[in-house]
Amino acid sequence: MAKTVLICGASGGLGRVMGEMFVNRGLTVYGTMRAPENAIDNFPFPMVAMDATDEASVARCLAEVKEKAGQIDVIINCVNNMVLGTVEETTMEEFQHLFDVNVFGVVRVCRQAVPIMRAQGGGTLINMSSLGGLLAVPYLSAYTSAKFAIETFTEALYHEMKGEPIDVVIMQPVAMRMDRPETGNHLHAVRNAAPDSPTHRMIKRMAKDTAESKLTPEMVSQEIYKVIHSKKKKLRYPMDRAKALTLVKRLAPQSMIGGLVAAARKQAA
Image 1: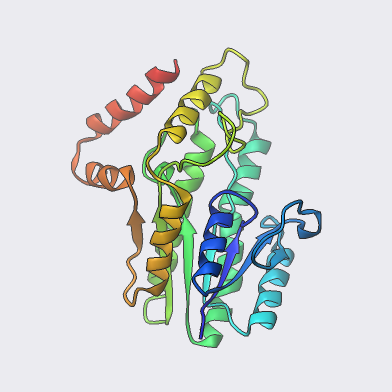
Image 2: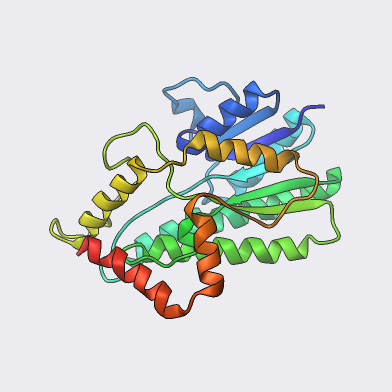
């Protein structure tokens, strides 16, 4: 019987590519977006309404997919928001909104998913982290701190699910090369960032890195597909440069890590 996969945040980017690949490989796929009725594009899989910032909406979404599919074997949390700005430039409202989507959105989904998966006898929860979950980057204080939170939350849940038939996984891709405008619609400066702020230069630097990335959504989707079908799942799956950074953080002195961050800051100065 084909596995049923729910991709939270499937309207664009990685989520859409992944959903299409999984459908073509015989999986039953459902995706989420806040307002499917307003979707301009057609999707090769059903889209279900879900607002990650609303617990009732998350509960309704999972209940609907469970009712339609009979069970939910895999949930992949791809919902993601990114803003760039210094700590001073970023308002508390912007900090809180990013955490409400990127962190508490994942927490809401996992809280609703665990009892469903326990009742059906098993399942897999996959949370998307990134290089930002490994290295604190200047001008990305809100985003990287949220990714660090996802790392620790997911690791704690992984330990809580030991002894139960529920696998918990962290994927750690780096920026992916996608077909999108030069700075991408995923890179936003905070409202208070002045036009000559280093924040805007960091956006251009990140857009360049993304355009030159060797990692694609198809490659990440393929890795996740392999994880879904592996019998013994690891907690973390670093990809591309995240593999090297994982080793560096484990073995290198803090001074070396500080040097890496300083180099990134200098490029945006």
